[in-house]
Length: 336
Ligand code: KG4
Ligand code: ZN
Image 1 (cartoon, rainbow, N blue to C red):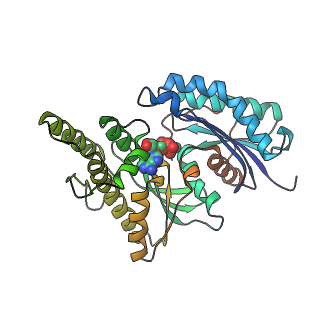
Image 2 (cartoon, helix red, strand yellow; image 1 turned 135 degrees about the vertical axis):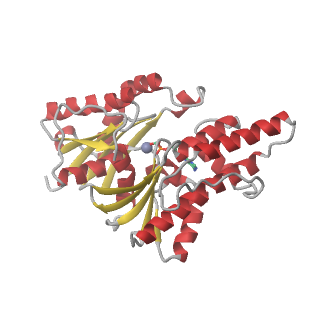
Image 3 (tube, protein in one colour; image 1 turned 90 degrees about the horizontal axis):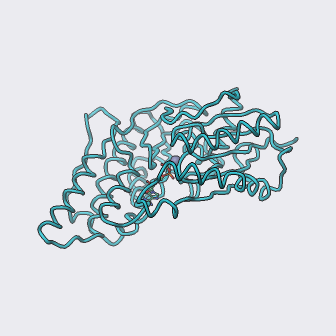
């Protein structure tokens, strides 16, 4: 047809999602079925439960995506699917579905790296955005500082050596009994807290390193909570949230700005669920402005897991000549 239509599927963690995109960057539909309520009572994602829920939801989500886009299966030009990183059982549901559909429809299949999808969410949000730029990917599973040199061409400058940022938010929230996922709750509490109330460590590692480490900070918060409880002292949730968040944000902002300057990049792009964090956005915006660097981030819906971002990545992969075969497998620890 006159347009190039992508059908995309995402099932790497706890959202079952399908989307239809026109020419890679225009979202015709982006249906997300969240399992958060199912996993909430366990305080985190239960892999077996996630796989089952994906199986129950995936056909419905795909049908809705086609319907909302006003297209039928025979209009679709290719299928993009997340094949890693993520939970293996959850990934397999999307991968198997995509393979079956690509085979039945006789159209190309494109496997997508989930982390690349998070970066591409920004191409959907910002139609004028073009590489090169610096991307700070902060999600529940990943923390990467990436020099995006071109579409599909990435240079990883740094990554976390232990916990991902979102993981630290979720673990701290859990220890405070705040519920799952903890990131948005801490974000909200932090707005009414004193960021200087409690002194938590800022871990910068070696001076030249763009790597991160958040497990020490997480432990420091847990130790603080335990010690307050043991002493029978009050825990001011807002202050803990604000002080923890400030420690995370300070290191992220410092390294992102430093990397952008080193690589001579005038744009920093945020990606992943933690890109929704208001403290991170505000602080990075302020510091970037001082250096004459632009900051861009996706809207909240495109920050967290969704199939539209996977479809955009699939489009550029396809245009770069990358096509998967029907042996495509789920790779839980897939690297960018
Ligand atoms: O990108 P995402 O949906 O899933 C992964 O690929 O990991 O990210 C989910 C993570 C969770 O850890 C959640 O707590 C965190 O993003 N998150 C936030 C906020 N909104 C979501 N963290 C801090 N502040 C927020 N406003
Ligand atoms: Zn994600």
